Image (tube, rainbow, N blue to C red; front, top):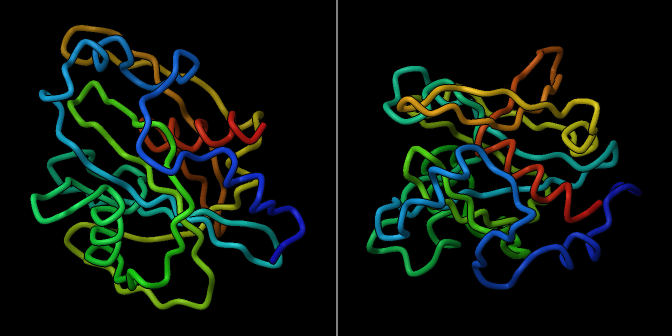
Length: 206
């Protein structure tokens, strides 16, 4: 395990059960999202998988295919909508990760939750943080996932790579977070909910 990865400190930043965001939490479309009642939002869960490696901890991310109806082409965590058969957001996150990238559910060690994340597009996201110890083999669902990659946690937590942008959605201008990240020689733009959840953990660990 890399020297820069403090598992004990990470666990103290997480909740054992789903929790609501605080006033300090900042996410895209906050005003519009908070105006929606929880019953009007679509519950979903994502797996925020942290991979400890000798060269430094990494975060497992995917790029969605361009033809999907929701958030096409965006960088995201493995995850999706909760189904009636899912007893908890943890089950949703693990099931979706197995369906999307072929990650066996038994390989993820659940550490806890970050606060829920509401989006202006109508989703209530439960971020489930887990430790994923290599080695592991992945098999992508080519319909949903264009690629999977690992981004260094130190890069994602670098404040010089954090910025804000805005977009007009349904006639209202919303600000959102952006993280500029280079992995495997590629410049990647992580934005919206995914960036917001990464920064949620960054602020708690800082």
